Image (tube, rainbow, N blue to C red):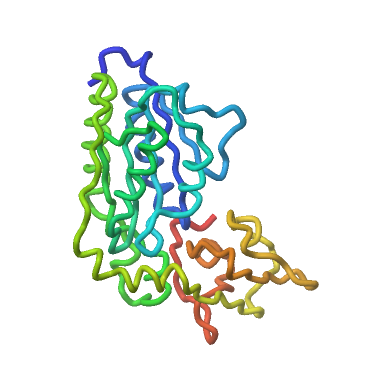
Length: 265
């Protein structure tokens, strides 16, 4: 695919909530590493001195949260200075059911920074962080799409070919007209934050939810139990899905019987 792998270097940068986007980013990184130099970064752990100008291309991934790009990947973009030269990009998003125009919104913001999306993908049908909590009986919410690896391989091979051949023509996702019908739901989702409840009899006060929350939306009380700051919550529900004791939930009356176990650490 690539004739001179030593001259091609790609940065993979992602934001992940419960782990869907991280899993896709890791698979992308592994595919890239077969053909060129690749580096993998979470927006939560960007190293000092990181500079996209040092790479031939960039891959950016994020989860959809209420039909909109997740907050921290947008902050990452906002904090970037416009790149010295147009940089070919592959952008993707993960979602359970519906991405609306989130990828189009993100693509336009990328272009402002001289990051030029030359191909893109919505990985829909990924495990639903909210769906598994609100409708746990729907087993489909817990699974990745069967064609995930196939689509990653196809997209990355196409992207690498474009990087090698100097392609920097923007490929912007089309506007989805049906997303207009979802606007009231999108607005409500962005304004309303479901309370996260603590079931004290299960909580070991380990502090994992506090340290894991990149939005700093969880503090602790005088007994070291977690306290939630709803105005800071980004609604990724990592705290619930990664709690080792299943002590957190969206239900006041009971804790979840099952979470996204494959992402728990």
